[in-house]
Image 1 (cartoon, rainbow, N blue to C red):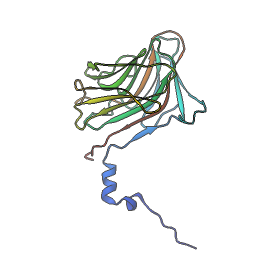
Image 2 (cartoon, rainbow, N blue to C red):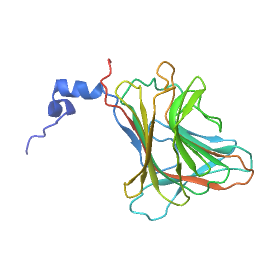
Image 3 (cartoon, rainbow, N blue to C red):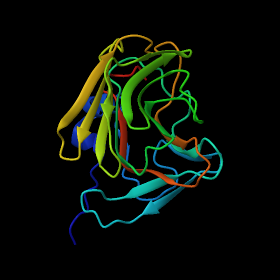
Image 4 (tube, rainbow, N blue to C red):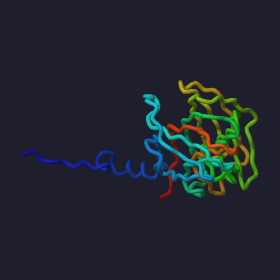
Length: 231
């Protein structure tokens, strides 16, 4: 009978390295393998909107959920952390892989957001999609800024978007990529980045019409940060 050796993470990494790892704002992500709560992101309907898992046999997109509106105006769904979970201090980064099913009357906010309705975030840094127009936005106490350029997106096409804060949260950079990883658009904002007020993280999609329609498919979402935390 051989001996059983139990190896701990501490023994593998070493005490100092493990301590440093635990003190970082580590990566959280979801593959959307189901439609319920995803890791750090809770989920809720907006004005009776719905969400459901869909199976499209796409080997490049394992796990997909689809948000749909109801017959109530400004309805939809969101996945979001607590509205005050983050005070942005630098190195935060968040990513979403998605495709829109419709652009008619549809608004999507993704990134560091605190809204749970169709209204814009009071404090946040996010990618905003209104109809076919994608841009980057920031807001502090509802005082907002919008990137000087935007991008026209189309339905039924996979995209990836990123929101990245620099080392001291004085600059927000927004990225849009194609499914193949080609950079389609980028821009920055250095105003109205909330660093003394809290915000959340996640995605919300709503529709201002009164028809129940499929709005957006979500494939992957993540949030991370590389700075060391004093804890």
